[in-house]
Length: 81
Image 1 (spheres, helix red, strand yellow):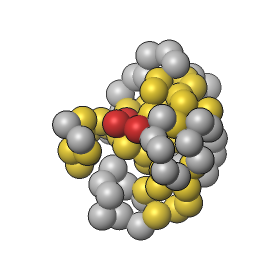
Image 2 (cartoon, one colour):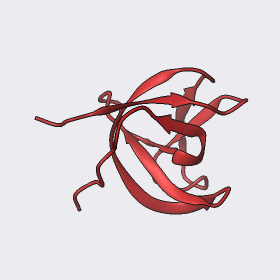
Image 3 (cartoon, rainbow, N blue to C red):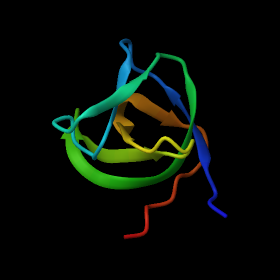
């Protein structure tokens, strides 16, 4: 059982879902501004706008989104290594 939290995309432009917690990794798709998504956990990654946290999506497709552009609606735990 994996506990997930919800988050809302607060960017003005579509937000890329990345393969790893860096903007240099491959894009797996995009999330539209205002979308509410499932977040499984958070990790430290590339610094984006002063925030180095990235959320792993919890909807089964995997991938990471920069926490700078996602407002978590409940606490999100760190990913286990």
